[in-house]
Length: 367
Image 1 (tube, helix red, strand yellow):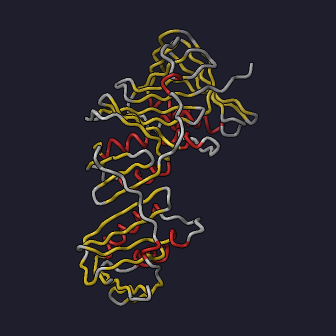
Image 2 (cartoon, one colour):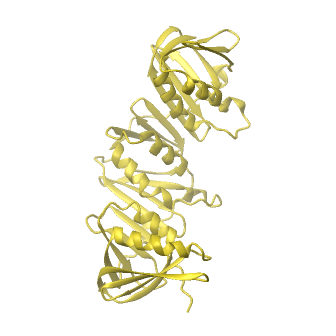
Image 3 (spheres, helix red, strand yellow):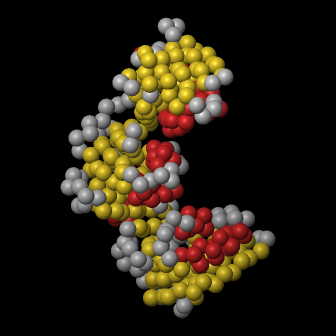
């Protein structure tokens, strides 16, 4: 194999596929990146057997071929090389020669035949969604996935497609985040995607998010195609919680409040709440005022926020971290907070659309 390609393009492609390279595996081949030169394109693949990322760049091919090369070393070298053309050459003993201007490296590679193939995902039934929208759906839900490996199904997000809608749902046992959007498709499907996969997609999209993502499913895998990048991930197996049953349909108290004002008040009150055992802050809602307070051994904090209240007064406590994480991803100026009792879940949602719901269990207040 012998090719010539741009340092900038190669560095960018390596950075992307490295997101799927395992650093903890006992299989040395999985610590490498597969390079395959064919038809004037260089294919790069990272694969940790849970997630695989494939990327392509245009290149000048002098001799076709393939090799697996250490991801860490190769990535470090390519990133440090000057912004000029790079020549990559592989000999019959799997030695890889990297030349760029005044730099010359030799690395020992591994035969490409030993690298595990990515699972095949049929692209017959494909959904198309805007990158910006999908990134936003991830941003507004991913923080509510569980970190508890004893319930693996909750360490991912449920994607449901049907009735011209796509929904993304995350639940960790204390809270639920649900984001819905319109999707022009008559095909129904659902799958639970590991949060690691969604985080990597979020990073790959980055700030350049004007294009589209193509999504295809099988029973065990999901394929995301973003321009020249293909991300294939295993799906989580098991039955996801029937989330619709745990979202309250009625409320006794409903407060309209400025998102920013509430966020700022909770951030200030949480400076003290973090010094306590359970990060507790208390809402005391009465008339047109919400009192946000924190009382710990070393002191107390009190904040007043103006609200529009419909229904009964209420006192209720929450983990401030869980409130802040949701408030930071809601893009609307005002939100509704819906309460039933001081020990029942609270619902938080924007006032200007019905695309987002955040449910949070309260912390029981001591008498």
